[in-house]
Image (cartoon, rainbow over all chains, first blue to last red; front, side):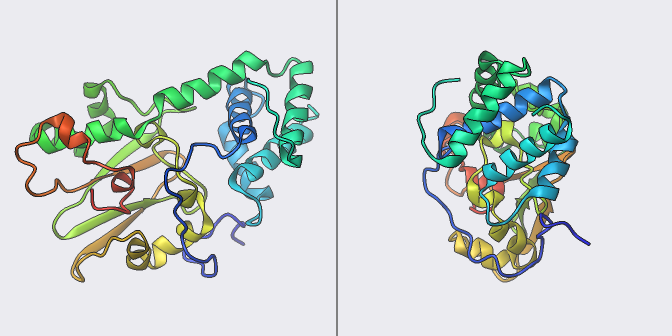
Amino acid sequence: MPRTNDVGGLDGFGPVLEELDEPPFHADWEAHVFAMNRALIGRGIYNLDEFRDAVERTMTHESSYYENWFRAIETLLRERGHV
Amino acid sequence: MSDDHDDSPIAARVRELEAALEEKGLLDAQELDRALEAFTNRASPANGYRVVARAWTDEAFKARLLENANEALPELGLSMGGGLQVQRLLVVENTESVHNVIVCTLCSCYPLSLLGPSPTWYKSPAYRSKVVSHPREVLEQFGLTLPAGTEIRVWDANAETRYMVLPRRPEGTEHLSEEELAARVTRNGLIGTAAV
């Protein structure tokens, strides 16, 4: 069965909404999530493929992009006993 | 990293996790600053604009770029190694009969070092689901209407391979310098949701 993230060709996600002059991050916490992930991967706490896998198995379409990232990071850290 | 005074629940959770990791010695604040700086300083669409302008003005460079982009990029001081791993880049050229557009249907793979931070719409399920099944419709939402006879090729990026579109050089730009041409290129042009 395809995972939730595998949306190619599916219907029902509505129109593509373009935001003009969009900043790289919409809130400071998003930048922190981005940086935290990069630092944890850099330290070898988990690797990029493990992170991708965690996003794909824990993401929801109701959550924002960086909310899904944060859930994946929390999940990996919990599974490895770091938090 | 700088203090964050956002009082939303998610911001508080991020702060808590960060503090817990710092306490355990798994992170330090300076490391986060460095990780972010490495990303924001190096990843810019201006890099992609330079690549396109060079390809428009130098046929031999364009040939090398289309043949093996990873080997051609260092000629402009660029590389695909700015992220966590080096990725293969394939540059796909728009022509009179073919228009290219890029997507990552599974997540958000994108040539960050050449295009800068990706827009939210690129990462949205709406774009990722629809551009592969109804590309013409999606391009029209971006204001790009292609002739009925134009073939649209959609390139689905993945963990190892990223794509960038080489737009067509606009007509009447023969007199422009490479820098002036670079200023004509747009981020969406490199994705394929705009003509230039």
